[in-house]
Length: 168
Image (cartoon, rainbow, N blue to C red; front, side, top):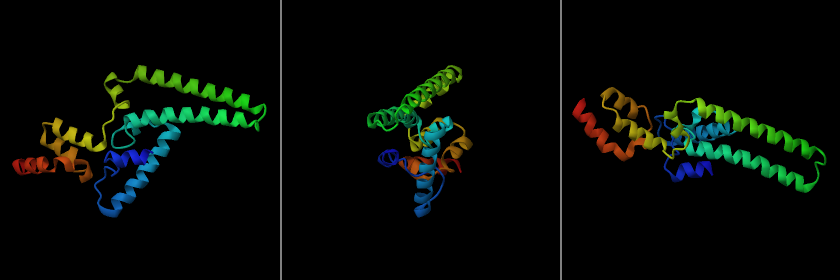
């Protein structure tokens, strides 16, 4: 569903400045890799809109926890694990509580200005456009646009073209 959401939102193309089949292949490789890495080891930096994205990052974490308990319930209903199921429930509850505590400590210690980045629905393209429009300095505006895939800023192509002709 992660890749489907990326396609629907027009955010599948990875932010590197690539074109054609290379863009598609690198985008697929990077999107799958970053999602797997994020889901298994919770790298918070992957919440950036150019990677997994804030809201998708949090929903992926919650889905992982929910899946664990659903799998335990299904395993318990089969009765094949016997007395081991109790130990698995205990370990799962301890690990989930530990993760919850670490998230609480994390959120209480980070700069409050970054809290919204965990819950944003902004795509990589939207972030690129926002960065271009927010900067006054021409060097920062250029750095916000030119290193990125054109698919991320095609919605403001004419605006960027006008800016380039006016300034260079």
